[in-house]
Structure formats: C-alpha cells, structure tokens
Image (cartoon, rainbow, N blue to C red):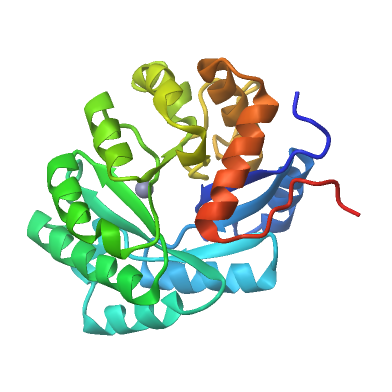
Length: 274
Ligand SMILES: [Zn+2]
C-alpha cells in the first residue's frame, strides 16, 4: 500500500470531457483520497485547451493545463488557432504544449496536414520555452524524424500514453524524451509487451497517467459499472508498474512524482502537509 503521505501526479487527465461535467468535484475528492493530489488537464483542441486552463485556474495547486491540438483535429487548425494557442502557451498555468503529434491509426486528419500542424505546435513550444506533451500512434517514423529536428530547442518532451515497441522506446530515450505510461499496461490483449519494457525506463524519465475518462485499467477490481476511468485509478496503475519493475510501490510513486514535478516545473509536495 502507498504511504499515508504519498502524493501521485496524473500527467494526463481529460477532465474537460463531458462525462466529468456533473461530478468533477467528487472525482477530485476521490482522487485525493487515493493520494492523487495533482493532475495535468489535457488540452486536445483549442476549445478544450481554453476549458483546461479555466479548470486549472478554478483549482489552483491541484489542476494544471496543457494547450494543444490533437492530431485528430489537425484539419481544424488555422492561423487563428495558432494565434490563440500562442496566447494560452504563455499562461503560467499552462505547463506544456500538447497534446500534439501524429496519429496514423485513424487518420481523422490527412497525414500531410497532421505533419504541418505538429510542426507548428513544435514551434510554439520553442517560442514559449515550454515542454511538449506528445501523442504518437502508428506514426513513429515520421514522428521521430520531425521531433529530432526540434528536440534540442525545447526544454523537455514526454511521449504520453506510450504503447509502441522496444525499438521506438529506445529511440525516444536516446532523444532524452520522457515516457508516460497509462493503464494500457493492464490490458492483457494488447499491453503485455509494456510490462517488460517498463523495466527499461529510467526512473527519472518515467511518468504515469490515467488518460481518463479513456483506458479504464482492465485489472481494476471491481470494475465500475459506468466504465469511466478516473484519476483515482492512477494508484492502481502505479501499483501494477511497481510490480513489473520489481520495486516497492512507494519508490515508483515517489520517483514518478518527482520526475513529473521537475518536468512540469511544479513545487515538490512529497512531505506531510502542515
Ligand atoms: Zn493521446
């Protein structure tokens, strides 16, 4: 079990999702009760990023925001979007640019548009001097080629919800990227390779996330009837990762929180509250 004062940090929670509209305060209370004291609210569209920032402002020291446009929505990205994102990027509550990246799994936006919009957001991170919150699915080759050209110009970059192969993982670590692991690792149909790979991620590069309301860990018992994932289940994900890494869960918790604090520039909060 986690120590009484252990603090977890969920680096990816889609709390602007409509499924949280009616009970966000209860969701946050349940998270706190499980030691999940801080959450990064993912911005995946211009409206979503604006909403994420509003949530962060309404819950200071608990919620923080990212600002970006997901590759699924790349087709909607125009000069006005770019201008608004640049304004959001300068806000102190916006701690990273993203999620941005490439997703060739669904190709909701054409690949050439995804590439162009990804590069525009890479440039925003460079100009705002903020870390990147990155999404990559079935697009590793194009993704790493573009990221390589910008990596030295941004302070840090996390490949969130990493689900790819060992080769891809080695490429990201060689580029000094951070890795975000979700409850995908609990999926016995498609995530078992991650249980081995997670052992090879240095503690100062490993961060944990729920991607709520998506990706409810399949090993959570009992499974909630509503099937909605929540930040409180980060504790379960942390326990699973600790077992896979062969280390006490307190160590995984402490290290992943310290890594996330450094990545997002947040104050340390692992001591008992006075
Ligand atoms: Zn994503």
